[in-house]
Length: 75
Image 1 (cartoon, rainbow, N blue to C red):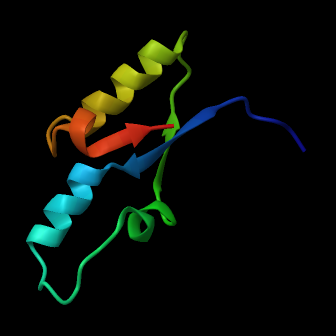
Image 2: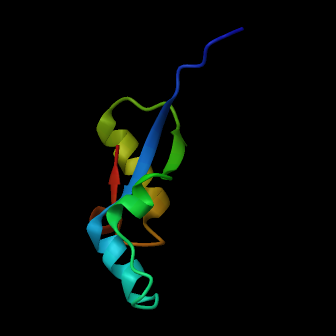
Image 3: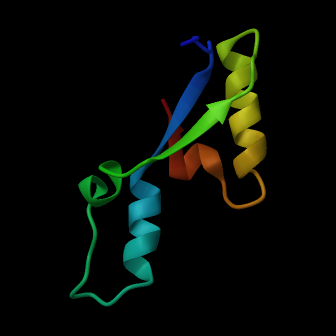
């Protein structure tokens, strides 16, 4: 067996995302941050030189879909 040295980013929603989700569903069905935090997205990152380059890669991937700084945090 061999080892691959790669990194991943875990994409976790922030409260503004939860607020948006609650604005598009019935009032009886409201979400909390914990509803979205248990099943987060994971992105396999390319080889990068620094955390700043990794964050730039992630933001570029999410740039077209939303304002990532407000809606998501990157771990």
